[in-house]
Length: 273
Image 1: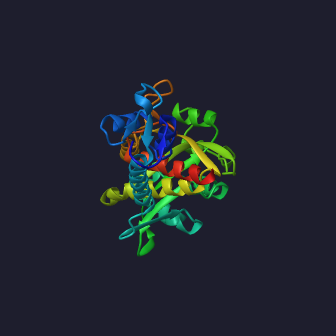
Image 2: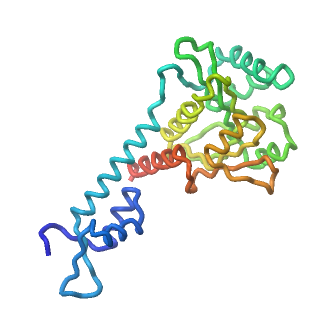
């Protein structure tokens, strides 16, 4: 038996789990002899495992996780910047809407102003770092009761029917369902959509666990909407509507962006313990 500290499999698996590694990974590393195993007195059970070997792998994984979190939290500001909507942005946001969709589909000023007056954290804008008036795009994500969201997804309600009383305000200790009402980007700046999404996820990771997001619902009705749904691996909700989709932020997701966000939440949880 080599010198050093030895631990049981339960202790080893716990250390792996804390680093974001699975039990299967722990035993695979044992089989691959990356973790030394010792059986006292040649017994078949009660094996011990080298703690230094375990820490080598968990430290490496923790470093990788930290790098992913840094990547999530760093927003490319070489050309663009993001921020929550402010009242002074309204004329330029409406101008973008008019340019992209025309007067028929542009949201009425009195409606949109009522939304943002109720909750200042529902619209994230992307703009030219040298001129905030030059808005390149925005994403609107509204916290509402799930019943209201389902009406919107069934098209029993239109976005124009959303009133301030339908919109919830974020309060500590609560968890929210979100309706992704719109994702708008100028075609020439579509490559910046990832940065806009990252800035939103970064913000909500910072708020966690004071405020939690449960699910995001979306209705696929635009190019940007479809991109958002496919890129983040929303699940279809055909029971509601053929264009209705759901993203459960607690479930395993193949999107690297969502995985990084979930890693960030786990890091925040660990700090609370």
